[in-house]
Image (cartoon, rainbow, N blue to C red; front, side):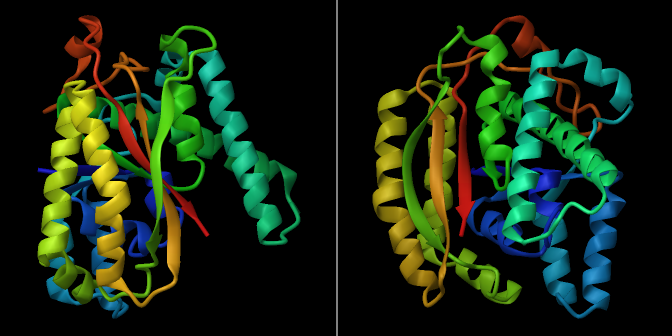
Amino acid sequence: MSRGFISWPGLFRGDFLGRLGKLATLWYDEVSIQIAGEDEHLHGALERAMDAGLISDDIAVELAERWTPIPLIPYGVDPIGALANFPPALVQSAVQTAHEFLMRDSQGQNNSIANPAAFAQEIHLTAYSLLWATQCWTSLNAASPCGFVTGGCEGAFIPKAFAPVTPQGYQPFHQLGSHSFPDVSEISWSRIFELRAQPQFEEFRRKLGELQEAASEDDRSVVAQLIEEIIEHDLQDLSKVIRPTKPLAVVHAVGSTVPLPMPMFPVSLIHGEIDAREAFINKIRMGWLFFYLDFN
């Protein structure tokens, strides 16, 4: 079974019912979504979307069943105190990545920075969100193979998160392949679920699940074969099913070429049901794979 993860900055900084949520729903059997608060925040957002006529009651029920809310910061954890567990160099990398991304975003929208203090605060909030998102993903992936569907600055930050646990100068991640994929933002949610049921997408989700298992077991030959099939054939076939639409993004498959230890000390997630500390303590090494979407 394929499992995907979307972070709070990846999903909720934009339209949570937009392209990233739709894409993940098409691609994965189960989608874990990081939220800032209790589960009710996701349910409340779905209810507001129903009230606004953005989705039907049936679609809201489907999404509530398929989307699993994950807390932005694990329950019972002091967010300020826990930041001390992150290496200072990693915090600085997150701040730098957030600054570069937000500057490009501001310039791309031709917006001037009218309030430098507010801009500086947004940089730090984005940086902390990057740290917690990567922490959450590594814990989920340690418990059971889970793909990270990233947007924005997350794709640039993830390799930096592994820097403290890899030899100096070593590049832990490499691009395994890339392919353009159509825009799904204008496709209705009812159509998204129709597409999900088509054999091409069912086979794709099965293959993603197999790929995640192979990566976690460091079966490099299977990973290489599946990546080639997905990039060269499957994404192209799925694009034909979705068309006509304009290209959404270039999908980059990025993975570790050798098993890596977890980059951060993981914490209990999902109401304490998942605890990956033992994996860290025993230095279990595992494969890491994520898809970075370079939006046009």
